[in-house]
Image 1 (cartoon, rainbow, N blue to C red):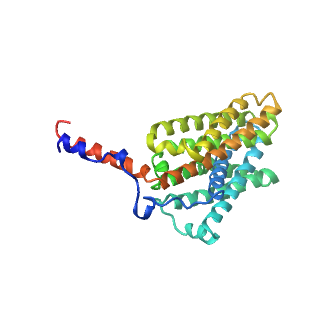
Image 2 (cartoon, rainbow, N blue to C red):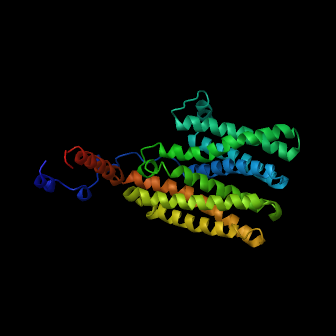
Image 3 (tube, rainbow, N blue to C red):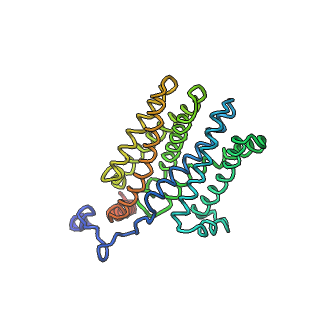
Length: 314
């Protein structure tokens, strides 16, 4: 192909990205608001709270252990209810447990959520009633495995789609979800535990806030054009608020051991930031699916790069 021929070809950025009858190239996500964002938040809260409970038990903090176990069980139960509501009826969730498909993130996630829900409920019940403490500790220890999976598998779930903003962010989304989950768990534990015992919760909150902030920054910068939905429109406003709330909450957590007011402000800011993150990610995915350019431009760039690489001497 000669250079003059290339010059006469229509450039990608001059094209009108339209499909038949004005429809988007791909289908928009059908997940509902607030069901799905709240489910993502509660799943992350449950998973990270399980880790906090194990850490608290290992360092001899019974009050924090009890609080974190209750938060883990409540998060798993609430997340399951919201997932069933999203699916439409309970039978659909139960049907997903009839078989295990390692190739399906939804199937794997359903089993992870079911295991996390049962184990965290057993651990919380033992902590509240004092019955079967050894069994409760064993269940809590098992959630050290199911907890991280619960907190991050939803990132794999959204990335394993054709939605450009989600699929292209497959590297950073697990870290973003993990950081948001840690910040959420630390916030709840700080708010519900005396300051003298809440040291590990504050550490978890600060670690989560730092991880979430770093992952979100890297995500937006690496994706380029496909990262626009994370910066613009409703998603951009939500995620900007999430960054401000998370960063502010993380800084306040450093002072929370000395002040009740700082504890309350930090916990509330981190919780609001985590919710804004989940709602913002869903909004960004919908925006990227609705605009054909986020699907077409990257495809054409890959094709162009492949064509140039295949020409000898280039």
